[in-house]
Image 1: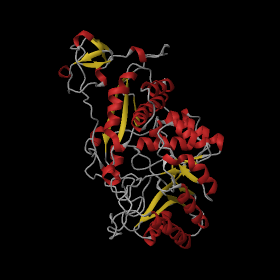
Image 2: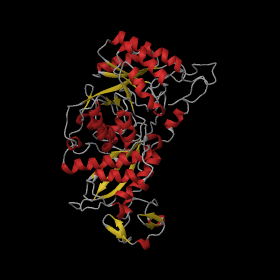
Image 3: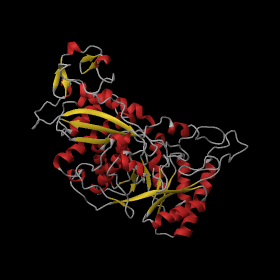
Image 4: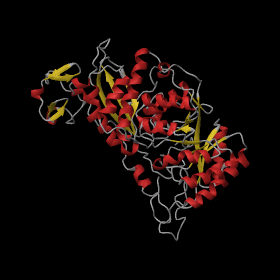
Length: 496
């Protein structure tokens, strides 16, 4: 989810964020001296398996004490895994030599980026692997499990590498594995563009539009405060705004509440669905009175409603001409989305909690969605997302890729690349990154007059300054501390 230009919160009502910054990759970048380690593959050298007992590395074992930094595997020390190499000859000698994850939080939200290096000096790729709530697990999946499988592969074999890594875990999918896979997948596309000296969008058939219209979020503690913020965004050139407003207790998703709003309840800071359903129509009634009918207004229920409640909310908002209603149902109830969509007078947008291309495909083909809001890294990266975009085109569904603070600038560039190359594009959620993020990720895209346009530089056109990233170490349990507080006034937990 996006916030307004002056806000950099994580995607929550009051979810905290770190101002102290983020961190670095968890791996040592020290390399084994080839002369001291004859045999296994070290940037083109082999290290004898018999001399490296201890931790398993591609069928051999390495003792922690023999590796500078002590952490294994560092992909600079890994032997080529023969079983994962392509059964065809590559047309040149270019190979993947190193894969590692970097974690940094310049905007307060932990971001995970994968860097894939090659045997050509200076040629590397970057990919977004951000599952901010479990970033330690993603780093482990990248470096301990996936990286050893791609060392020695030609980076142009993107589809085969994607399928290899996808099938490798046997139990497929899920946000940890798919984000790790996404980081490598997107990095390979970055390399492909850099090798040819072109932006990735030219590898996908080129542009079909000049830029992607975006929406951002406006929120306030009261209806009037929320509307003031929408008006300010409209003056900045935004033509689409997601509108949220606070309330008693925890408030509403995307807007702060009033502490102790239910003083006689077991949980005074709770979120009450009845209050929400009564006040949401008042918010949009007032918005149309003040702002008129031209501005595109959106609203996010954030997966908290039953099917019956979702239909009731949609019908109560009918007079106000919403651009779409976002995430009315939790993914556990997506089988009921077709009936909600059929009864709703406005388009339904959903899908950000899906964690497989297969589940997203079912959502599209079941008739449950008008706008597909998949989090690209959670389904595995650009390779599956571009297939979903094609399916959307063929079925009359539009795309609205998830673009919250916990998508890195690399991931945001991937979203925009999909937007400008797909006829199925609908709208793009956008987060305005603070300047610290631009420092860490040179080339981060900026919105101009309500549009995002891709970089014309090779690859994604965005780099990562690892020295700057190291100034902003990540903090764990930011989301968890917030999510644990999302309860009804009676104390029952609610979907965050």
